[in-house]
Image 1: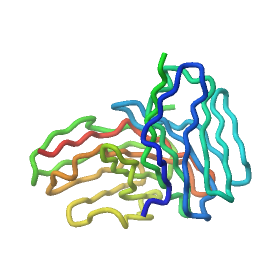
Image 2 (image 1 turned 90 degrees about the horizontal axis):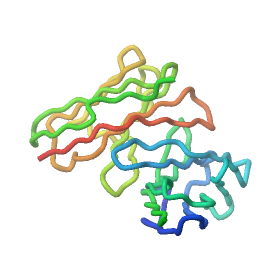
Image 3 (image 1 turned 60 degrees about the horizontal axis):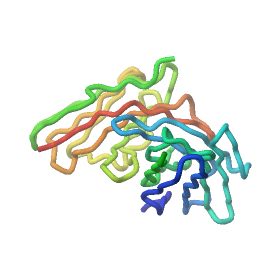
Image 4 (image 1 turned 120 degrees about the vertical axis):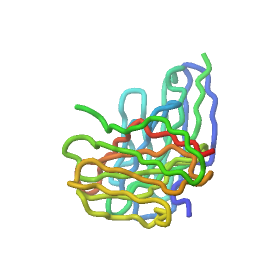
Length: 111
Length: 115
């Protein structure tokens, strides 16, 4: 039962443009959401998070938006850079510090 | 601050053999997780420890997988006997304390190939 879904397995964007990665979840009890970035042959690294009491959190070029009514969050990267090319995982925290991950979106930023 | 350490980074074994992975979490982190990530999928939780107690091992295939966290710090994950479908990256992660709003930090992973 996939409680966190990333329906786009891949995304290609031109350098300098905006990258938008989407994530949907099914469990309304989730109250904290995270994005991780993963390069090949490395573990996922934490990127940005958002609490359910907010609808937006910004950190430099990265902004996460949360729409609780739609059970949807998105990660915006602007401007996109070639070094942003990686797999991005969306995650949600449930009860008991359990984290549920999506299947990832592979972002390619074209120079 | 040192990150989550894992070893070995890579392991190739034949099916029915055994393998063990080791993890040292970030200092002071009470919660430790083992995830399995199969190529093209997201990380799947195998087991979660709070100090040296098991919080959740509902998705751990207990007929072949075992894990322990003696003394509430380091942890080992063992697979015996291994199957072809166990080929995956085994990710160890840790977080500081219970409660909402935690961030978990991953190690670089242990890559297992079963042939």
